[in-house]
Image 1 (spheres, rainbow, N blue to C red):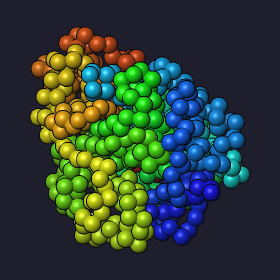
Image 2 (cartoon, rainbow, N blue to C red; image 1 turned 120 degrees about the horizontal axis):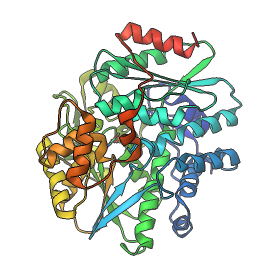
Image 3 (cartoon, helix red, strand yellow; image 1 turned 120 degrees about the vertical axis):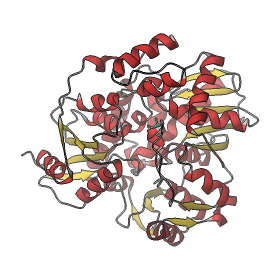
Image 4 (cartoon, rainbow, N blue to C red; image 1 turned 30 degrees about the horizontal axis):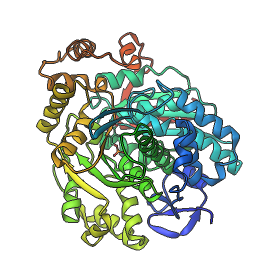
Length: 483
Ligand SMILES: *Cc1c(COP(=O)(O)O)cnc(C)c1O
């Protein structure tokens, strides 16, 4: 009954989990999906007794079966979550029938730590499994959060190098210092004189090339190894709420997810397929509301204006992981390949016939004004501080006012987006000095900034490189080849 992996665009070519993790993306451009979902519905009581890292290990090995007996992998997963602030990697804040699932207590204060902390160990387990000894280089284009989370996960890891490139004027000052202050010699950070799309295009081109003595892999959320560990926090949160008596055993609850690349919410969908009692998954978008439109009309149309918002990690028009949902509900690889081709050729696809099978999802969005108002509303009514991404989801959940219990995924520390949060609370942020803004936010909110962000004030920026496309490509190549 073993699980294998195949591309969303070709179900006939089978891969093992290890192969899928190491490849990242299928050769035909599709994303890897499991041949079936493991059933956990009769194991919930068992999972409820586990610590976070054990639960995560169990979920990951239920998909990546060849890792089950790998004791080193098991110890590594435990080690990965030791880098979090508390043993319970997830913190929950419940107000009546709404609970905020805080996913930002990892080393870089955003939820991407959950999957990226485990990814190096998955890659290492996959290499052991396939008997591969070559060094791997992780190449990542980032609009901010992924870059630092990947650097933090791979820095100092034997057998790995990591190079990160970001749009030089497109990330927040805090994010830039976070990345540039990474000191280990297996890390390289370089700013590109260009926007995020140009960063991504450049990295894709570099993937097509060969480098001496090193294989290239990706830490972006197209990798199945990044998606699966995220399933664990849905189980963890549900079972915690049940243990705390906030919900009844077996009660179906809703999750509202601030969505960009559709990875986080897809992990929730997978948890439901595995038997977790989930009712609706609410897909919350910012002003770039292409997914809201899709769920309402069945048409995915990216021929529209792209907005830079105060929730930048959700500023996305091509939600890569949505392709996986198209496969899960259609089970038709030729059809998915055609939709993706339509998107590439014509900038849109029409899949309204799939909407009835997407009944698990509800969609909504928040404007910039809605987002700021929601930060203030939650702070004034609950004395609780949320970031701009969380506010998008919180607003959508509040407006929908669905019956039952709602969990809002809280994806970043408010201190990662100090200026926008302070502004929303009614205090004008100092445009020149990020750390003054951080101090002001502490004063105004009566909360304390997380240590990894507060200490950036005195951090040394080790990486100072930047350049145009050709210069950046050469710098990265030289780093990868030890020149
Ligand atoms: C990446 C990110 C998101 C979006 O998650 P997806 O998995 O891409 O949908 C939301 N909030 C924050 C803070 C993020 O970093």
